[in-house]
Amino acid sequence: MHDDLNKRDWKRALGGALDTLSQPVVAVFISLLLGAVIILLAGEDVLATYKIMVNGAFGNMFYLSATLSRATPIIMGGLAVCIAWRSGYEAMGGEGQMILGALVSALIAYYLPAPGVVKIICAMLGAVVIGALYSLLSGWLYDKFSVTFIISTLMLNYIANNVASYLTNYVVKDPSALDLNSIQTGKIEAGAQLGKIFKGYNLHWGFVLAIVCVVIIYILLKKTSFGYKAKMGGLNPRFALYGGINSTRMLYLVLLLSGVVAGLGGAFEVLGSKYRYIDQMIFSTAYAWSGMVAALLANFDPAGTAIASILLAGLATGGSAMQRGTNIPVEAVNMIEGIITLLMSVKLLRLLSTRGSRKAVKQAAEASEGGEEQ
Image 1 (tube, rainbow, N blue to C red):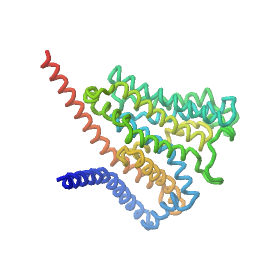
Image 2: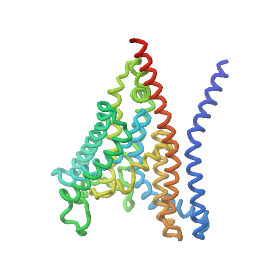
Image 3: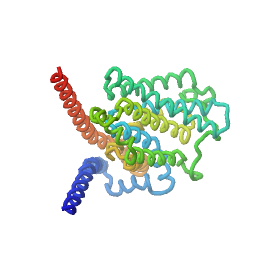
Image 4: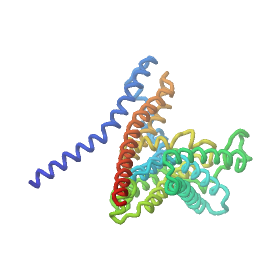
């Protein structure tokens, strides 16, 4: 009897894992298939073109370094999504938090009169604080005024980007820039930069710190009571209340942690890659949105999100190599990533629909009980 139960549990777990993996695998397969059609229409060999793409992303240390460096902010954006969405809060404000984290870290590292190491630490702390506060703002709007997370966080993204753009244009623009049209802050001195892991390559220590964040978030969400309480507090506040969990407190804690990670992702990009804040540097590269796609591909698993982020970054770096080595335009690679995003959005809509149904049932049950008590 005991063996039968174990066998059923094993089969159920395997079935759940296969169901989780099926949509991401199908999404990637369909995207590559449609990409192959574009390649054929351009008169190129499909296998040879995809080989160039893979080599351009992971083929040698130079390309691998570029891919992992690009993956760093995507990993952090994906982790921010994992924290919020696994807990039942459909927050999409990682982009705004990352923008403000990047700007604040750039200003602190540039203007603070302190040794280089102190500048790095203070710049990261500044990014953490602004990211957390901006994330908490959406939580406060939800808690006090029932403003839907999707609406508030999306609008806050645009506000953050426009505020950063105004400051970079008119307040903290680098007056010594060689290109007068460059809209950017002053360059951070070498001692306040996150150094390169290997000399001569783009990969910086921000990637290592991002992997450390992956491990910490994985343990926190899956191996501690915080992860359980966060999930219950967001997905089923009423059940959480019966279990002694303060769902409002967990709401703010979850969003605070999500904002910390997103803000830190912006700091890594500034301190390790750009060495300044450049207007639209986060918005135009869509790091946060790629992070959301990575999180969806991994079903909000932190470790899987890191792997998916590296693959998405590889699409971008490999696409550049494909453009150089063939007649295929880089837009073909953008199309592949766009199709993955589109197909993942189906999963996103299903997820939102399911959660909306749960909330409706819960509200109906509460209203029914309230009527019976009267």
